[in-house]
Length: 171
Image (cartoon, one colour):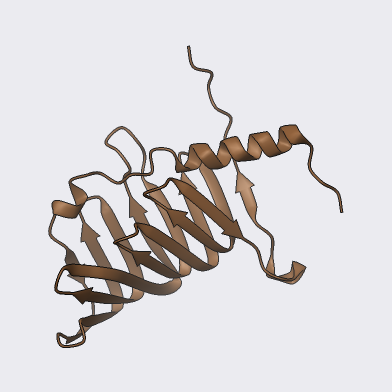
């Protein structure tokens, strides 16, 4: 097994840190109403579960989720979890007014609102500021500004791939 040189590890860590920096969503997003468009909606208020299918678009402020199916779990305090399924499903949100949109893709996207964590599974991809992660599974912790990308257990499942753009020196 060949281990990478320390400078490669430092560059990789810097890239992981930079992609996660500024990951906080626009603060006004949570205060906005949630808008959902779908071909079909099934709601069970007692269980706190709503399922939307067809071409589904969920929007709240700058946050947008597009999928073939979205399931929302909620309790008396509000929405706890949003699950999106597609080929692939697409999540996007603007981290700050002066930052470009963050895009996330996966065959399934699990968004835990309380912990502000997004798990992308199956053809997972995360793009922010021109940097990109791809792998079998990606866990994106918005609150703590961390990304964990995983490949498959065998070489046929694919490996984690990163594209890190060069940074302009600060003056």
